[in-house]
Length: 367
Image 1 (cartoon, rainbow, N blue to C red):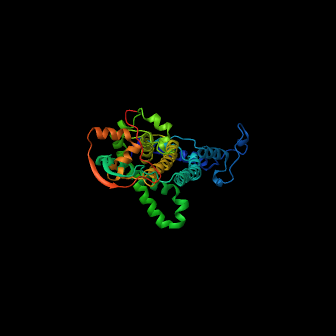
Image 2 (tube, rainbow, N blue to C red):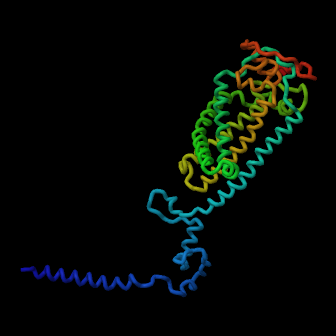
């Protein structure tokens, strides 16, 4: 026989369940939209965006969507709190600045430097070795110094060219190459840029340790500055040690700008490791690209003077051995020290003095 208490309990549960269904049914079916006059009470409602879907045309929903569109950050229960912001509207400002101002001023900087160097070459011509090549070679750079130079210079050129490809490729190269070829080359350039950065940083650290002691201010630098490095007058090469003030300027520019490029590059390569906000990532990208373009424009002058701009200069970083007359023109103090220490000499090609010049009288280190 069934227990009366159990039957009574089952009947009570059934009654409660039916009562709950009856009460919840009308509540679930009722219109939850705000009354028609709700928008008029209290704070004036913001004008609705006609582009919003019909389902979002109610004022409270529209205000919430507008806050999301303005970048307001909500609350999330996942570890990445940045996910609380659905839309970051400053991203469009960053994109416009990157695609407009950065490209325009970057092109101005590179074109301006090329025009200036072309004008200088047209006026000055190639800087000759005034006494001609003597046929006596002395060792300006040792093999490990040449390796350090080309490790840094070569990786920087790869970074500069791939960076320019990524920045200017879409407007300039996409119409020429077509979508498929451009996509392949851009992806290859991206990987070369990302991994080449580590090679550049290694070279940067290497040349800093190797050459920093030679690139500190010395007593010959002020005179070198006052004479403009001897570029603007004949037979006026100011004395200098292993590196003159112009070369020291290039060294510190490479170290400082290269260091800043390394920091901003790592920030972009490893998102949110060093900064927490997307705005800082965008700022780092603008700084990285701007410094990269500026450094490339300045390095064009270094490339010019070390190649077509000055006779015999390329030998210093090609074999490490330079003619003693060239070295006396530009680094007379260093030559005196080298000879006083009994530095090694080799035989090399000899040429007559440059036309219209007399053998120069070089200041000695004691001056």
